[in-house]
Image (cartoon, rainbow, N blue to C red; front, side):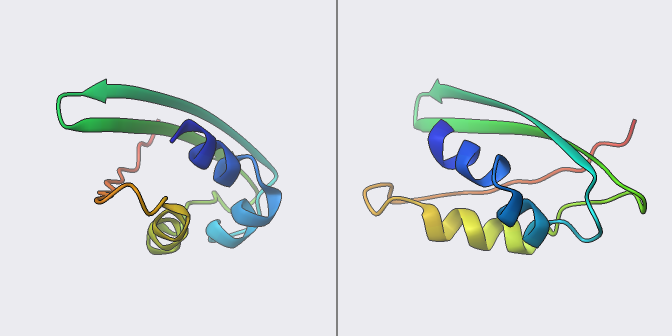
Length: 84
């Protein structure tokens, strides 16, 4: 899971596609942990740009579901925006 998330968030091509505006800088922290019924991956994405960039959440879901290995029967994606 960490590799899948890292491949998306470290790719300039993916981030250009997923950002709703021009992106100058992007920093991502990824944490993967095990719970009783599987794995949980958490990402904090700090994006900086001229027009306050944000992620296109529907495109992010599509990308992650497309990269989801077939031996993972279920993939649930929850997203929250954090302003600070």
